[in-house]
Image 1 (cartoon, rainbow, N blue to C red):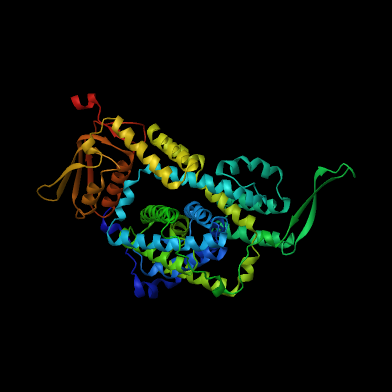
Image 2: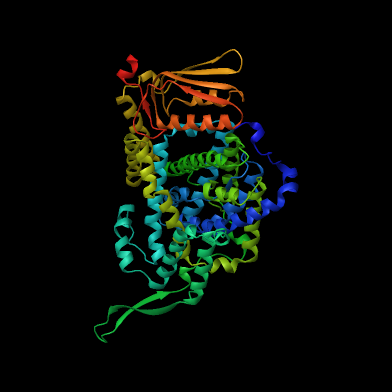
Length: 554
């Protein structure tokens, strides 16, 4: 592909608004339908008031869209941050949810300021330091945690307080003692999420499944009269006195979303009184690390989906997310990232510019101001069903299978990270995964002086040819200089990647090189990789590669 085959790139700014407002408005509305229930559910799963998610989505749309460095990504609360936010609320709150909420808002503000600093220092590329298998392991662990926490809410059951593993162990008990009416709403919602994508009717498939779950949940909530506390009876167990099969359960407004009728009263302000304590800074670093990593990875992924092949400014984008988090935390909103599901839907809905993100936030604001009673009618179990499905997608068996296909060593790091996160916390679990990855490289014979330093040369030949020659190993821990060098190469040249003297190239680098070649050729250049005498660890095209003793003889 060359430049002449690329579609004309849409204008941005006011010119883009004037030219594409109708496409962006339609896409923004459809994204709003997805974002509304997810924003509510994510906030509550994070231990925050439901309006904290709405405020984050409004700021992410109306504010971040005007200053970030991407084109069609959607900023807002995301499932990946549930674990770190909930941990911050519980750890700093010490049993007082409202105090924990306000301390966490302060941590979000400081984390946002750190993200702004990361962007101004042009450190966005540091996301590449995290091995792909470790990142996938972290996300899978987050998915497992979300499922464990939310399945009880979906079934209308309340587990005994305890550790994550205790909550896992109580899932069978919650299934056996589910609140039948609440569980019916949740299970039906989960089935819709699973089956909706398999529909063959094109018009129905265009309706976002989350909004169907919410609307049906509202209808079932009205049918079960959840607005009023009452006892219900269903056949379930034998009453020894009457000989009848009966079971009693109680339902009421406590199973519905609770929000204020006045939008301004939803604002809460951060409490910085714990800023000198270790637990505060653990929360700050966790929010900054996970939020930045997810945002950057999402932006890179969305750029690949963009039909116009636009490339986002990652440093500017993280500044936008950081500024959004700072503002969101100051008014009571939860942390945000560039979110992949809503961004993908935005592209599929025909969005052209960042104004689609703006419209999604503006419509969200209008809705919560004008129709708060609708939000109050949403059953918690319907939102929990959305999150259980989201968690499953993060930790689906197919994710395990994908990593295993890349190589057994990648799968080992993936599992180690999952276990580390589940047994400790996100930061420690990710650190364990990175340390294990480095140890594996050392055991494979990577030179100590090559572990964090890369050796390569770039030579511009006569004409249009540029040769990059790698010597030694290219690893997640050392390849940033090579990445920057490749990213700064002029477009439209003939690039040769000479791996003849390469010793070890890990999966993270192989994945980057694959994406670089695809992107460079999409913009009119040509790339050629030479040096095939490298042993791969699996049949996967992007598996890690090692130069064996036999390879060196050739």
